[in-house]
Length: 210
Image 1 (cartoon, helix red, strand yellow):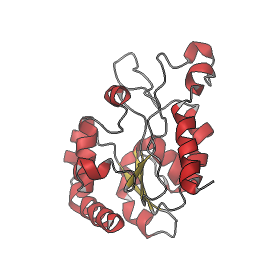
Image 2 (cartoon, rainbow, N blue to C red; image 1 turned 45 degrees about the vertical axis):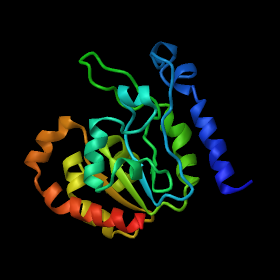
Image 3 (cartoon, rainbow, N blue to C red; image 1 turned 135 degrees about the vertical axis):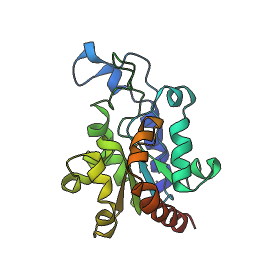
């Protein structure tokens, strides 16, 4: 079986996954409250992996990762258009939780489901050895991908981005805040992110897409 055939089998298995509905980590009372719709883009060619948190409602409805205002901001950070972003030969997109987790009592998205990453993540990452750069978005992805390199909070983790890129890790890891518009205040108070980090991100993205 070719590498692409194995990936296609993995894609089908992910698409049919119902672990958060049928075997939830906290018992059936805490199972996913709606029908699962796993969203992930796995590639045998892409050199950049976007490691996010979990799909929102709009992504759940469309089946396209980052198909919302957060995606518009992320694409502007990367300096790529929509067509390039959704070309799986250019980007792999694998959130910590493949399914929309629902809302909490205040109407905010719940964290990624606990079942997903332990069951799927290492298998998916191991299936893409060609990845050269992992863009680690938000605290849940940073906790999994960065281990001891993660700082006390998200701001300090992202602020240490140079150390991450200059380390000998393979693939390289670059921590980012979530591109949600709820983080507009954070971006305003941390102007170094757009001034210092984004030019490097765009340069590295352009190089790996060439």
